[in-house]
Image (cartoon, rainbow, N blue to C red; front, side, top):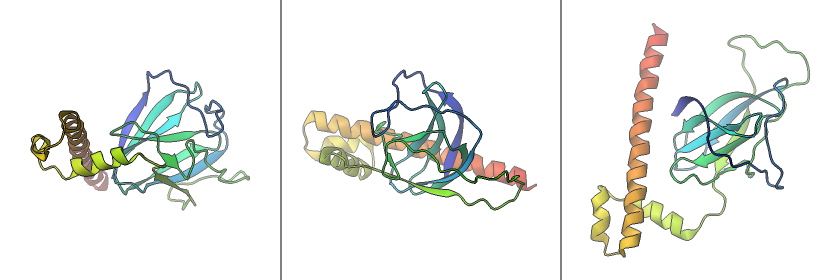
Length: 190
């Protein structure tokens, strides 16, 4: 389930670069593109549009193994970050995703029209073994304090506790978002 969030422009001044090292930003809003982002990971992710100034605009939080339809434009770049770690994810094998042009003609889009969407897969690139191990162990903790019982060095226990708390925060947020979505769907149906 996706949680649509009000667009929030990041205060981060980091310029986003593509796989070739070029700075990216949105250019124009004339050629439409229709996307289906599919989160293939077991992580919550943030889908982020790069605006005309090259700044991140947080568009949606996407739950593990879920998807969202997004209407965009051909020259609008998108990136995805792990919601827990901030790690940049791969989007169809690239660090920056540009949608394909939807059509070349002047087709008027009408409500309930079936749109052929570009399916875009969100996945991890190559990740360090330590990060994978930390996440795997943290997922198996019932309570955060259980990390202390693992007979591990204090620094590792602290990392596991932090990881576990952040995962729990995301799960609670996701459940709250799903409840809100169901309430809104019920309201819209009546």
